[in-house]
Length: 553
Ligand code: SF4
Image (cartoon, rainbow, N blue to C red; front, side):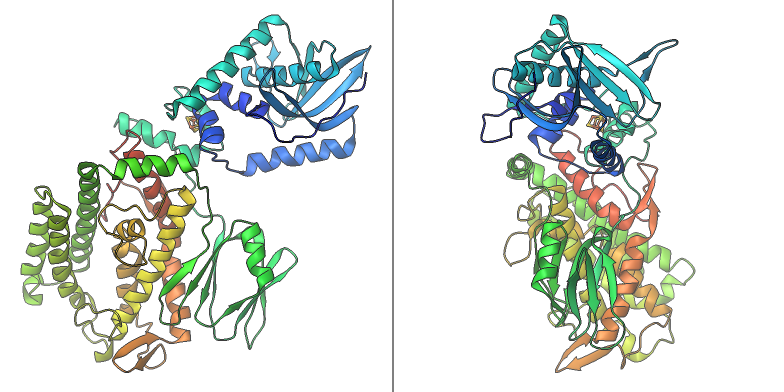
């Protein structure tokens, strides 16, 4: 009998057969994918899709890739294939990996067996004929394993489905698996951060780096008056008014930033939206106007965030950790940059003392106003020292005489303001990509159009990602006061050339790798931004010990 193929339509909640596999592999994986709706398509996932496409093209089986549903089982699934042999239908499941090898035996992995059983009961119900066999083909070692689907197997599946329903209803993310080696092959490891949780629970644990070191895709900045961003097939093309155009395959791009009066076509914007590429607009003065919200928007994660941040004591502790980290970094940078200088002659000893005192006072602050007060005092002292870090023979126009903003009134402040706006944009993007709500913050209150959480978290990165590269580039004499800056009334802004150079300096810094002192693995600063957002989320998931714990060495 030919099975009648059934298309997926409106239906009660049915568990995907793939989710059965995920649950058997690790209940937390099931929860992250099915409840929190986090799916990561990594290399392994793409390889799996390719394999299935190839097999479909080869047509070695009798039926290919069709979807079945069963309300009685509460299941749905897309079968790879099935074969008709000796009057019986056999489910065929293709896996790109290896089989489970015993000393002299070859077997299917338990998660593959259960998934295969799910397909068998779906097919059985559909054709109204017993399906007792699943063949699992492991392509990496060219082994095939036959799995018998008997009553015992069906009962196992029934119980597993009940456990999944309970887990779904619990609203509780399960603990990381005790079988740490499973995490190495798990596509959700960069989101789940199992090694980081293990490290937090056991300080002797030596975490493996499952979190990617770099961003595989780039941020495309479109700069220049009249520069046009267009679409050409599956590419984004940057067309300046003068000079050659440049094309970028869409899969290489993570975000697009349109600066000043550069333009983007509707087709280019649509392509970005369709591919989950964030697109952002910044004014010619460097102000961040806004952008598209890309990323997983799991409502459950935002509810958890909202509930955690409604607790003022919890919020105060996180805000304290954040500001402590910022002040440690300011102090660390000043000490490192003046290591070979006579601090007494520079007259910065009292300012360094001011930062130390603010840092020490933070632990006794009882309100967010007190924390902000200390942060402000330390900030004034920090910026009071900054000019001492610049070469003594630098042009007078490039000296730093204190922080000013809105508008910046000298080139160094113009550079800092531009850098902080880029950093803010990056922080918004990181928060959205993790699936948190940038409007619920720790310390900053929603007084302006800016997102409080992005303003909070960028405090961790102002020194390493803006102040340090700006000071270093000034000392490398990369800036020309007339070529790179323009004055409009009291305000000083970067010229187009200046903006391009600033983007290069700051993006290069973001791509630099750095060894996390607690986790022991290296990653780029760009990745570190995302990691800190994820570690912040862990603070309200029972793992508060790793957020904002790093500092400059
Ligand atoms: S990384 Fe490990 S603990 Fe996390 S979902 Fe995957 S297998 Fe489970």
